[in-house]
Length: 138
Image (cartoon, rainbow, N blue to C red; front, side, top):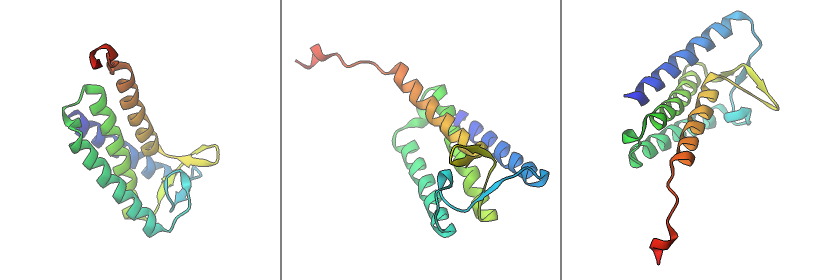
């Protein structure tokens, strides 16, 4: 439930923010390429995003993450929500709206949600993993 709720909130926030930014006159980049504005044909980018979503769903159910702890569930929700928001926009508009300039690229709320989701899962795993007891191996 936490995963679905955080995913839905992320999608709604991302698409709502993009809606208002596109109408506000704030400079944006219409990204028809891949993540981080890497160049690609629009059709290839759509296929790539759909494949990423399928892989995420496979990992989610294969690894049994639905029974994971609260932090990981929210992290997965951010990842699904961010990926879904960008995929929906690419299907409807043919591009993803980026509006946060970063180094040689640009990002949006969906991209940040994905990064935060990965960070939450990684940090939780790092701080909650139990070290292997090498004495038991002998």
